[in-house]
Every structure is written in structure tokens, then in C-alpha cells.
Length: 464
Image (cartoon, rainbow, N blue to C red; front, top):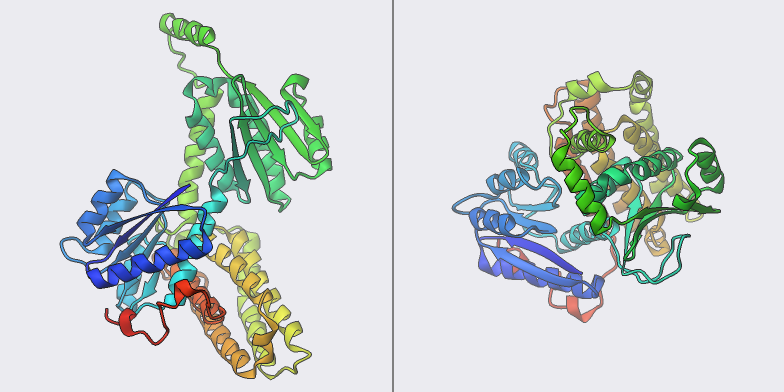
């Protein structure tokens, strides 16, 4: 698997340092992936490279000649809404930082470069990419056939947006078979919708041989499968189920059938009425447009969000002040706790953060913050005992958590109380960076030789 990263930085020495660090990250953490690094010395070169070849991550300086990073990002976002873009900036002015975020970057990091934070950010981007991409495997998992397949593609489904990506992939797979696959797609959609609503993630596995496409949904509650089949009776040759697995089959189109369809299409007038596949495609486009509103790539004002809020969420938002105060109390308790009580109080802090996460996820439009909460609470739960037993480290963590609570307070006031921000996603990147910053501080010192070249006292990262 080839992973493509573009590094746009006008200072050659610093650009070389970034290339070296990225090389080290992949050599140490992703050794099986083939890495391709492209470089640009200004925004215009950056834009030209992305227009020529899509990238998996873009790392861009903001202050560059010819075309600056902000302008390059704005133009890239016109044709690529999803590529993660990490901005490097030396600016500290809040207004300028807001402008950088609103240009369309996924996250930013400050200069001088914090090496650990930078590594954590790149690893997070790559891990997210790996989770969403297909994988290859020769063993068949569907219930129709046990022969070896030439391709197996796995889609991890954790959110509704993941299903939309799956639909788009299938509809682009073979234009000639979309009218015949629509019923199977609808069945899969109905079942996946139930799975997502139940709060469980699962996988859709696409397999194929010379004759058929096979769709297998795995890790499903057996009662859910039985209930689905009772409501959606499907011809037995098209579907099979066994406990936590259900498989669908779609025959591939034969050449003689294609020719007959083309001939019929040539002589028969096009129907004005939309068929089910066209309706489904339109629904997918609408869903993808909505998905953009959940990302940082489309502005949504606080007033717009307020108008769209479910009335049932209003009471929960009004309790944010009390929730924050409880979180602050638990952090103070964490500072003063005995060695025996530290882990228990940290669990209470995690519970408070998870309650925020659930409310924000139910509000919608905050995918970045929801994912950040999930990763950060996992980090807190996995903290080593040596950190909790060290009073200095514990006090440092408590101080950083207080700062994070202040950020949350500021975010809540601007978006839900005063409702004066023109873009609710303004805080997404900074909140994610603050959480990553805390995580990076408590990363264990790397002992691998590949990192010895980047000594903490080395001023080479401080030049720019």
C-alpha cells in the first residue's frame, strides 16, 4: 500500500527535517506501508502537485512566497474536501489563527515545532486513513461460497457517514450493474441503520469472483439478523445468515445481457420518472452534503446550529455549567488524592468527559470533537501507573486538564450561550490540538535509534 504525503515548506533545511521525521514515523510505526513524499517550496507548487496527484496527507507551511498556505488550502478544498491538511504556523494572534483554521485545514501545529506533538498528529492521521481504507485478503468469509476470491474489500462502519462512503464506492464500481444492485443496497442500508442506532460498529466485506459480488455484514447481533429477515423477506439464493453474519449475492453481468440492455436502451425512450437507483444516488449526494457540515470544511454559524437543535437537547445544554463545575471539582480532587484513590478519581474525570462527548455527539455537526473526546478518554484510561504515582507528573496533568476545561467553557459560551461565532468549527482544530498536546507530553521517551537524531535539546527544530 502506497501512502502519499506532500510537504510544502519554503525553508529547505526545515523541509528536510520534516521529511526525515516523516520517514522515521513510517519506518517505526508503519513499516509495511510504502511511503511516497512529495515536496513543494511554495503554495503554487503545492496546488499543482495536488491537482496532478491526490495526496493522503498534506503538511503545509502558512507563510510561503508566490502563494501562501492559506490560499493554497482554500483552492485545494474546492476539489478535495477530505484530505487531511496539517498547517505549520508561527503566528500566535487569535485572529490570524482563526483565519488559518477557516481556510480549511484539518489541524495545525505551532512553530517552533513540538516534535512529539507533530509525531502524534501524523500517526493519528495515518491510523484514521488505515481504518477507512480497504484491505486485501485471499480467504472468503461469505456464506455462499468457500472458494478463494481474487479480492476482498473491508469497510469499517462506525457512523452513518461510513455507509455513504460504501454506497459511493459500489455505485462507482460498475455503472452497468447499479440498477440490479439497488435492492441489495437498500437491504444492507436498512440493516446497517439498525446496527448504527444500536450503538455497535461492524464491517461490510465485499468479495468477488468471476461470476458474483458478495456482500457480508459481520459482527451483528443474532436477534437483529432474525428480526431483519422477518421484516424483509429475501429470496433464499440471494441471502444467507448464520448467527452473527449475513451475506448477500449479486450476479455479475454477462456480456450478452449487457448488449441486450444497450440495444433496449437505444430503441426505448428514456423514462422521465426516476428509477430507484437514481433516487438512491440523489439521497447519497444529499447525505454527503450533510456530512460536509459535520466536518471543518463548511461554515455553520452558531445561530444556524441553534435553529437546528432538537428541543430535547436544550435542557442538557443548560446543564453544561454544572457539568463543567463538577469536572473542575474532580480535577482538584485528583490533585490532592491519596495514591490509592488516584485511579478511581481519574475514572470519574473520564466519566465526566464521556458525558460531554455523548451530548455533543447527539447535537451533531461536531465529528472532529467527538473523535477527539473518544481518543483522549482512551488515553486517560491507559495512563501508566508510573505517571499517576509521580506527584509532579500528576500535578502537571491536573494543570493541563484545567486548561482543557477552560477551553471547553470558552467553546460552550461562544457557541451555545452567546451564539456569536460565525463558524462553530472554529474551535474544533484547536481543541483537538490541545488534547494531542497533553497526550504528547506524557508519551514515553523513545529509545529507538531512529529517533536519536532528534534530541530534545537540538536547536535544529527551533530555527523557524
